[in-house]
Length: 144
Image (cartoon, rainbow, N blue to C red):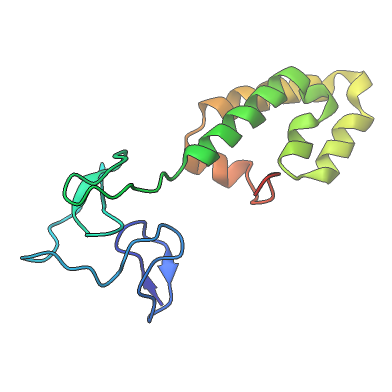
């Protein structure tokens, strides 16, 4: 196994294109690659270094796939659901955690789930993407 030159995901040794971000793994620039900075990524077509949030490559003009925008919106929705409807466990159902959702729903009359939902919602909204992924997102969020 090897890792994508753009996103760092593990890919097959013979993969020509990363299945996660679509970057051609055999792309070579004149003079080779220079080190990629923290706020840079490689163009999915020509391999030029572009700003991480660039929509178009300045070298070849190809549209770049956006990563993280879907995850960010899911994080915000889950956080708001936890704050507004956390006492009913709606955020747990949204995240695909049916067991905890039912548990919250069974005990909503005690107000404990509402307090937990408020705390979880605030923590979700304040968490960065990696922390949210580790603590709350288990890959079963609806719509994925």
